[in-house]
Amino acid sequence: MKVIWKFGNDISTDHIYPGRYMATVLPTETPQYAFADIPELNKLLNEGGAKTTKLIVAGENFGTGSSREQAVSALVGCNVIVIAKSFARIFFQNSINLGLKTVICPEIDAEVGDELEITDLKVINRTKNKEYSTVPIPTARKKIVDAGGLISYTRMRLVNK
Image (cartoon, rainbow, N blue to C red):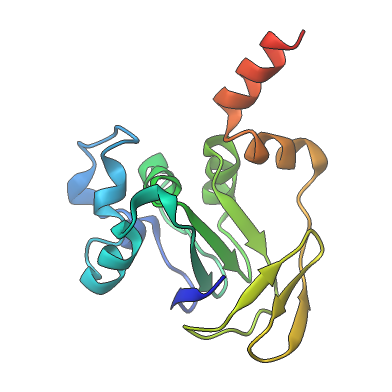
């Protein structure tokens, strides 16, 4: 998978989903506003809809700021995977609850266009021929993300009782 965008540290939920769009809360509508203030990235994220997985790499504290779920919802709707050195606590929990694929990789080194492979324990930068260890999330949380979020996971558990 190729990296489509690289961020530094402290990308806030307002960067991800600008506050002026907060009246829009439907998961089917939020993706169009993902990174709305970065038109080039917004276009990349919305091209191909949710059919194409997009990969973003970031530094530390990705998702800092408010607890707005729309920031996560917008990325889920764009079928984004975020690899970051670290995530803000509330953003990370919202990611689990809504099924956003996030990878904590404290030493990640990647540029736009780099080809990355993600496994359970590492990220492999095929372009640079380097490997970086990841911080695995607990099994219970991984099951929630893999199910598509907390609501999907709960439904699945209730049906399979």
